[in-house]
Length: 522
Image (cartoon, rainbow, N blue to C red; front, top):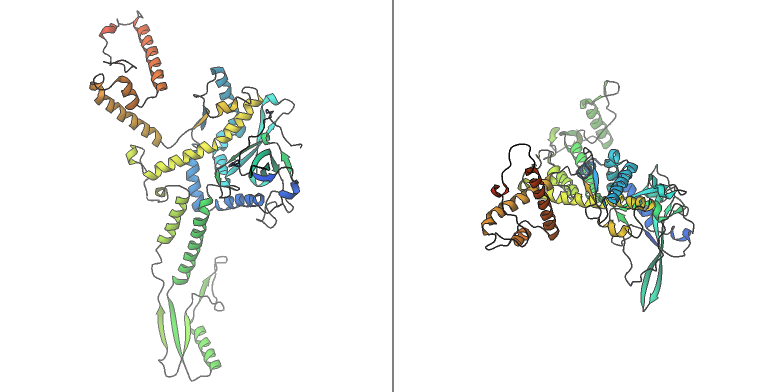
């Protein structure tokens, strides 16, 4: 099968058989291997529905309350004021320094291809709202070792991932194997006919171009529906409270407009007049006593519009002989029109659905102080952890692009990439200083505890126990500290041997605290 785009040569391996089907969070459409393309893509299912979801997410993200919450999340995740918004961390990669320098250089090139320094906010917001992101990787097929030439964004409503599987019965159990994966691009999009106005529609849902799996960068939110078939966005939970908020706001406005003014009730005595004449007499009284002046904002005129009648006008009711005579009473306006507790309730519910702290909704709230961690609310701590999970998921976009770049340029082989993939991490610049203050407080408390335990080191506690239980150092940390202290000690000795300057003090007279070395004691 001929596919558009390029494929990285991989070693052919026999698929591992298992009675448990493989579960992935990429939202690929699963079809039977060898089936006709026009048959399965036109079935009633996930292809068209996912495109509708993306359109729905984009529509509701323009709602002011939801847009404000999304803006808080994106601003927390991406610090656009920083010089380096994201950096690659290769501390755990067991490669030589020259290779690490090449990886860092290629990562910088990847950020340049994304134009990340200028479009980081829009890029992250687009991924957060849509719940998925696709990029077409463009290379020079005649010279693939030159790397990626361009990364071009693809509308997620126009592309779908297809996974062909093969099922066979083995021992009374159906075994599923993945045969082939590729993407399908349709320029008219996978939206059904009669969808949102102004969007390109696909009435046949049978056309499209098959694209190789390596030619597309694909990152999803990781949230799936109950059938593990549709990818949800993080704003999926906000759809219901947002609709409830809209309905309640509209009902509140209608109620206040209709009940805000006080209206009069005219009871007109019509005596023994017949019905027709009684109605005519009542109408004459209405015209005689009603004065309806209307201001025309377009012309600036004030005119009398008596031919129009609205529900906010006075009531005129006839009264027959034998009852009381003509009477005018007042219909009071609605009570508690300034109460907005129900609207505020759904606003808070909307923010809770998006994991945004409620304190950020209150305009009178001063927010949390950038001081001790005890002064920071619990909601802010949870929000910081949530944003951290978003960053880690979004970082897959960099990891997948870096994988293709390193393999194409021959810096890393295709077989070596899985080994270093988990060792690579991406550090975002954090505008929220909570983590920094928390680490400083924890270190300060450990040092204070160490000072209190110092007189008992060598009598009741060993140096190794203190390092591991009070300072919480690992074996690697202890070895690193010992090496650095030895290097610093040699540097101090070299400085003391220099003849320039005042005579240094003898080493034996310098007062130093005992080093907490492994296996030593006071």
